[in-house]
Structures are given as structure tokens and as C-alpha cells.
Length: 87
Image (cartoon, rainbow, N blue to C red; front, side, top):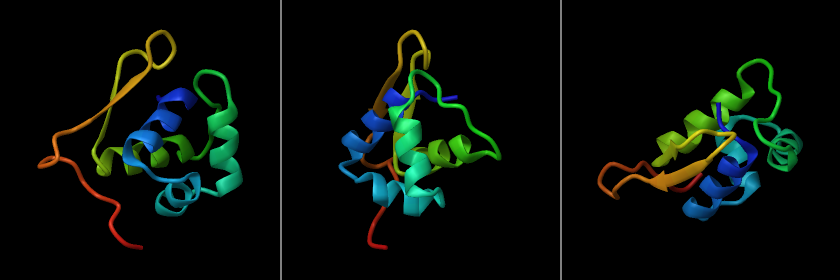
């Protein structure tokens, strides 16, 4: 699980828009925006939140801490980190 704060922070650390993340994860932009506006861990079905998390992890984000009590993100070293590249 990841929290809405972690999704927003991960996008910020990668320097990408919600639209880019939505496209790359195959999630509707409105759904992603709803997740980011939620408090704590967004309610999700059908693996939607997991797809967002996997997309961010593939881009080099590491989720740290407890998603509710101490949510955090960090970027893996540049050598380890993936990239979104060009569409």
C-alpha cells in the first residue's frame, strides 16, 4: 500500500505530471487525481493502486516508512533508477 501523499511526493521527485503518471500506469487521470486528493491510503479496486506504485517504482522511486504514520519516498541512485523517457 502507498498513501496519497507518497504518490504526490513520488511525482514531485520525478518531476512528472499527473497526466504522465496516469498514462504510463494505464490509470484514468480522474482516478489518479481522486487518489491524490484522498486522505491516507486511497481505496482502490482491481489493482489500480498497485499499478501506480509499480510504475513509480520502475521509474526509480522507493517507498519508505509506514504509508499512514510516516509516509516517505526516496529516489534510488541514478544507476539503479529507471526512467520515464519519451512516450
